[in-house]
Image 1 (cartoon, helix red, strand yellow):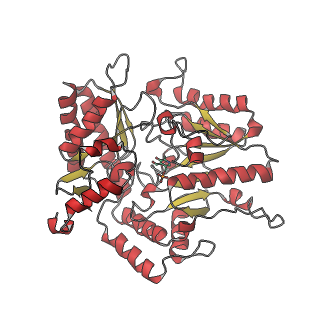
Image 2 (cartoon, helix red, strand yellow):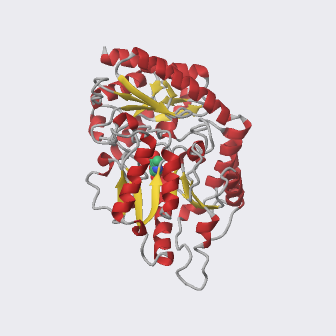
Image 3 (tube, protein in one colour):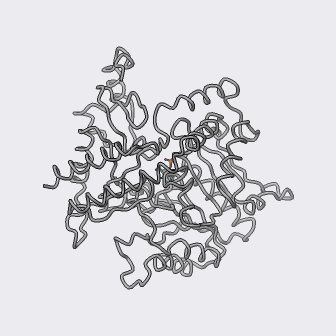
Amino acid sequence: MDMTDLGNDISGVIQADRAHVWHHLMQHKSLETNDPKIIVEGKGMRVWDASGKEHLDAVSGGVWTVNVGYGRTSIANAVRDQLIKMNYFSNSAGSIPGAQFAKKLIEKMPGLSRVYYSNSGSEANEKVFKMVRQIAHRVHGGKKYKILFRERDYHGTTIAALSAGGQGERNAHYGPFTPGFVSVPHCLEYRNQFPDAVDYGVAAANAIEQVILREGADTVGALCLEPITAGGGVITPPDGYWPRVQEICEKYDILLHIDEVVCGVGRTGEWFGYQNYDIKPDFVTMAKGVASGYAAISCTVTTDAVFQMFKDDTDPLGYFRDISTFGGCTAGPVAALENMAIIEREDLLNNTLKMGDRLMENLRALQNKHNVIGDIRGKGLFAGAELVADRKTKEPAGEKMVQAVVAHCMSHGVIIGATNRSVPGFNNTLCLSPALIATSDDIDQITDAIDYALTAVFN
Ligand SMILES: Cc1ncc(COP(=O)(O)O)c(C=O)c1O
């Protein structure tokens, strides 16, 4: 990195940050004795901090976002040109990139046909919740208003999104929550909740049916699930789970909402996570990787059948009476168009599959070497390694030890993640989500750093 880029006053930046910035997900007590980390530059898979130190980023901007990597001038140029031409108009009118990206996106999502723009994953999910509630009022006489969500899943930070949140530590102290959200059991076989199951996937899905029957199918409007649970521990669904979930939704006329905020746009090696499992969703939401963090954009995508329910012009309240002001900012869809074009031009879905295989192979080798790795899970460039104090009892590794592994990697120039203030007692999964441009050397550097850290922390 060219240190002249730092400007003349990096210590002033650090002071200003420490004095005035309230960081996300952070206990600020630590900043009384440590400087805040300021990231000043990124290129490809790497970022540089204010001291000039280089880091290999194995988590795509900390929270699985920068799918095409840093420093993409083609996205920056597309955004710049668009902003000069037309930066914003409320999305009650159309825009050129808004229409073009919607068309391109829908081409990747057979069975779906409409795109609603907003700015964050939380908001995209809230749009679905509002649509489901409006359908309940208008189509089901006020019934079918309940929304089911799953233990360990996360759907966002607002109060309604937290009401659909299955992570106790994320939710603690923020209630009371919105009524009408009901939890179903998680499907993580390693933390077996159905010991008598012959087919674990089917048993975990059947547990959803039990909740529907308990609540009354005529009260349940939608089921909201991550295709692969992300921040709750990178939970890949067991075989047999998704076909049975789909069957249950059809049987009880329940709309299926897939939250692709993490898996969407390439992370698993398919355009969308649900496409690995032959799912036919009624709603798909996405955010992070849609424009890889070059602009704020989220999308709520749905079917023509859902869209048609909002077209009754005999009722003044019949249409979707919702607006997201910045859903009309053109930076989002124009960045998303170029982001998608890069993935196509550079064949990044294939790279994700290949490098994802290598990542899993390396993690398996680490599991053979380190008893502390109890389970490894993932798909594409999206992986988790669950650390345990004892392989037999599966007692979770202590949170301090897990954080020490993350810190050791960081001090050796590799940024990895771990489940954090998520599921009580289970902040013990290391999380990896490198950009889709990762090379074999990058993958090896990531797993070498973990190897070194596990040796240092647990031996
Ligand atoms: C699966 C999932 N859904 C929704 C969200 C919320 O997205 P945002 O932070 O953009 O509101 C997140 C964020 O981490 C997520 O992981």
